[in-house]
Length: 162
Image 1 (cartoon, one colour):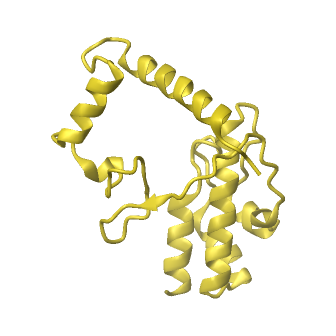
Image 2 (spheres, one colour; image 1 turned 120 degrees about the vertical axis):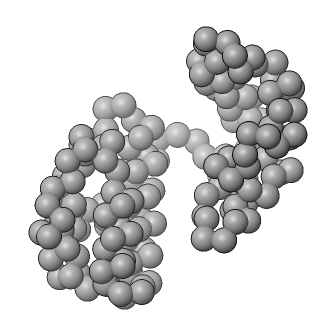
């Protein structure tokens, strides 16, 4: 993988929702990335750390706002300590079976992520039937969130966390 390909992957993955859709200039960011000059292992570590930071900051409504990409790289923020604020559920996470897709699969009976599952999958229809949620309801999104929060609460209370 070339340095430009690695940078493009980082650029696309940078959280636009956490930086108020202002990533800064692409050329200064590329220059900062070239100064780091990571090999593939170092690049993978940077990406994993960044994704962990993104996950944690999206959980916190008062999370600090992310700087321009060039500042993030120049200041070495990808090495910042991440304080995990919520309990983690101990599970084996499966990945999507579609080539070049690394999204998580939700549910033991699935081999594809939600994006690749498709709306005509019978298992998806059955899951709506099991939950009792009405897809045509005007409050469907809120109902889904409420259902997920309740389920997560049940799972967290039953799970032993290290």
